[in-house]
Image 1 (cartoon, rainbow, N blue to C red):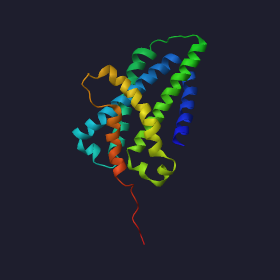
Image 2: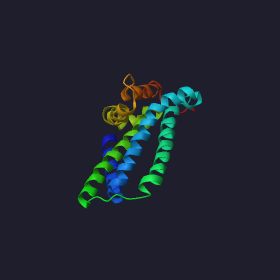
Image 3: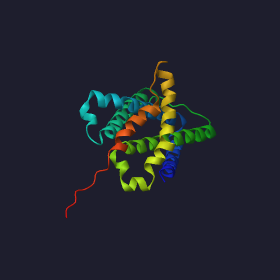
Image 4: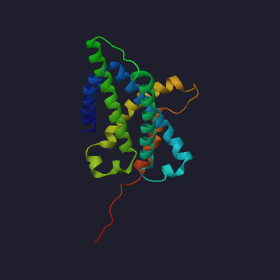
Length: 190
């Protein structure tokens, strides 16, 4: 169910991408990929440097969201100020529609995968509802490899050759505390 909801979210982004065009969609996808990359790789460092960020049960999830949102807002503001807000690049209509639709689908599924990862690193993923819809198993089989592919692509460009942390390893370390911690259960009032 989580996978098909991701496909529906990606379809919404296809519609949005066709409306805004190929150039703007490409810029948005780039900003999303860099934001998620920074979020995944900076969350362990942030929770180590600022222990209060990781002390709560939802600490990793909140840190993931905060870093990704902050990075995206900064990147989008800079790209709008210097690229998409200043000039526009025109492409032939068929290329613009098909290209922007494809990039919109990739961006939409990446955003959905990231949101599913955020839910998975929180104790909310251990609730009966999350287990019934297959959140934990689906995220690890479909969403995490998709995020890892994009992050490893960026990692291949920016990391040094002796980097031993792959995206899969970093995400597994983020998922481990949520899988070990039981979901919050209300107190029995009888």
